[in-house]
Length: 487
Image (cartoon, rainbow, N blue to C red; front, side, top):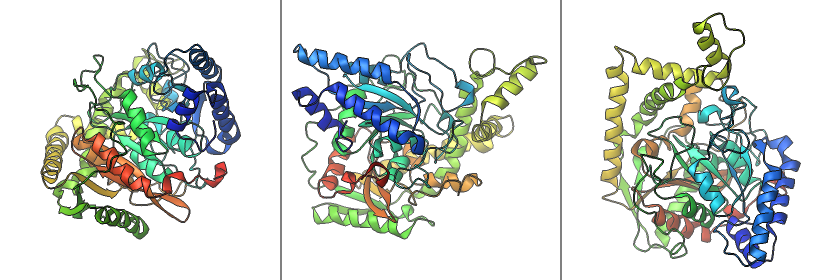
């Protein structure tokens, strides 16, 4: 796979016969082989199976059979998405050897479209983190600077796309885990509206917040992947029942008369000046191209982090209770009794951040504290959703930074959980409200990418992608490649 090719370009080259799917797949696997020792983007690769699938695509094209939207395109899927092939570890000792008996719906849809799944990228354990340093198998490094984090929890997916190890990847986003690493690695990351993409087969962190979405090099690729994975699914009771929109048909048509909201609450202390200036320049671009810039208010944003770190750990406490050393997953050796089996299996299987969040969630749900913490967080959630609903009566989309800083050095925040949690200050409210959010690159500082976030009302992904494409067409940030991959 030529490392600068987009998923759309590869798909078209393979469909026309200008490139063989086996060559594209071999090129991606070769790139992983060259760079994996430095980046640690992947927990596992699936070379033999990928080559078998690629040969099948070439044979189908040669015999004149119709090809899917992603035929021959090498894609990586975050290692918390279940597959019948390989392991699904969630970067945890608890599931180190777990083999799923079924595929996630998004995996089925990708393969039905002809995508070639070449590997499963690293993540923060059970998707709990903002730096991909919480993985039981070691941290992933940012391809723009190997001494820095790639963001998290989908840091392996982001690093793999940025470094050209795959044409696109899937991530999951519970509080910013697609958008924040996309911003820190200089790629496009889309968190869809809750329910637009099936969660069936996603190992749950916080079920009312989790969403699966694309991580790509450009906006058109994000639209292409979303076109394949979005839509109703009877296997997911929270799936939106209506058919997904056509995200590709009007992508190249600029939005006219668009109103862009700027929340004063996004002027957060600790945001780097270079980040604010890059986002302000992007807003000015839209102003010069006919957009109306509207001040809006999201007054409950300041409670977003606090509410999130009650709601998400509470759901995690419930979801992770199934890993008890009995049914599946890690089991402690030679337990003295049942209590010892439970206690040691969980203590040995879960890392420090996962244990911390389980304890936070269990405490918030406990008798005597439920009303003071969990119930109050639910009320704040409703107020945050009301803020967005009100804001979107005044504007069509909201723009702000994806992350308050560019990528930070490995280890610089890992000893201070509060500072790490604040990395998601701009992203968590999107999940709390269930609305879509998209990060696109909008500049660089000290050789590190800066991300801009676009937020929209429910099911506004088509317009959001068009708005992002307007900006992308006039700038070259998305075409730049990290020095670690010869960019």
